[in-house]
Figure 1 (cartoon, rainbow, N blue to C red):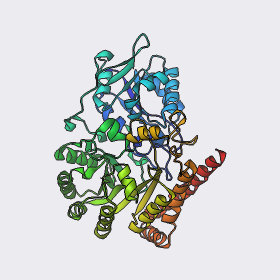
Figure 2: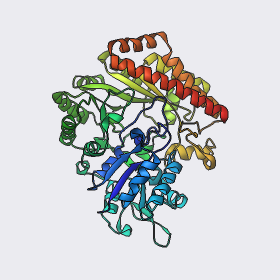
Figure 3: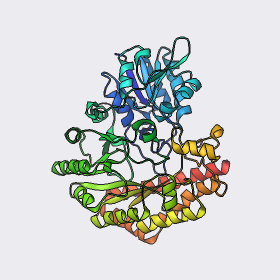
Figure 4: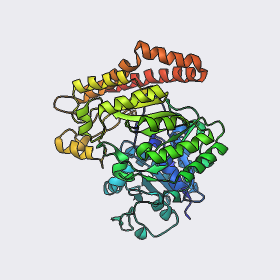
Length: 478
């Protein structure tokens, strides 16, 4: 068995690479998700070690020093962080010239040829669903016999093996929480809308929705929701309860946990018996009856991708959602006391100044507890990327997704809507949503009732204004 280091590399200050597909950039408020996509193969490799450098404030020098103790390093990478990750890989090989470097993630899954061509320091990449591909590499199996692997052979020729079949038995995957316990400080992970400390993991992979922009289902997870058994999920919950003192919330990171409502309700009833407070990703179409079952069994918050308040844009991105259904769902959540963190995207196909205004009004009227506003990011491997390249909305030869500070930029533009107009609308959205008297009063009320909330909100406020200052400084420099 090869001595294997799994690494989320040091990157931009506050860059949350562990979030994988969702937020490959610095956010308005510093936050860190668990590096689940690295922890899962690490759980399959005995004697491995997982290092998540950003939240643990480990520098390039720190991780380079570790390289001497390992035979190979497996790095999670993304389109925005790829160049930075390659530089880290070069430093690791400088410290240990015999080190093998492998990469996983959506970027290399769909651009295996380009990734190996552009990064001679990388020895192999694992395509698609990569857990057991990585395990085979660590076990020393000949590269030519490993399904799902792309590699550079002894002659420097790039070879792509046949695809690995999609994993069907999800219970075959060991608990990622055991790797968290072994290698990470779980108190380093925090998300503004989740209770701290929290723990997150996946109970299944894949998403039935066909959203054109969404990276993970189109590159790794697929559009069929493959799930762990209810008993397997609850067993991991019991492990977390026993091994993570003080954890206040569990977050299920499945793309859409509510895709299978009978199963979601069954898990909820089990969580209720265990006394667990939990949250999950959900589509804005969950019936009130199911919401009530989940609420009665510990559900506190739903992370909901509204994306837009304009119906035509929702059609354009194949969201499969009607605005009026989302309104009713949100009203039901408010009445049942379920908090919502609503996510929105500006700059999607069909966006205009008028539709941006419509989305802002929708957010204000439905009033989620908190929001996140992102810029449309057409990642390679998605329908949106191919569409944008075809229509001339994206200059694929000169595309950047983040600036020199790791802050997301607006790569898309339209004849009637410029990069700058889309970029500036994000700040306007935040200000109009949060700087309303009713919203300010609500937040202040929370802080008065909860001292920990007061400290967190004050810290987030300072970070938010610092982020806006840096963001605007970068725009001015450009």
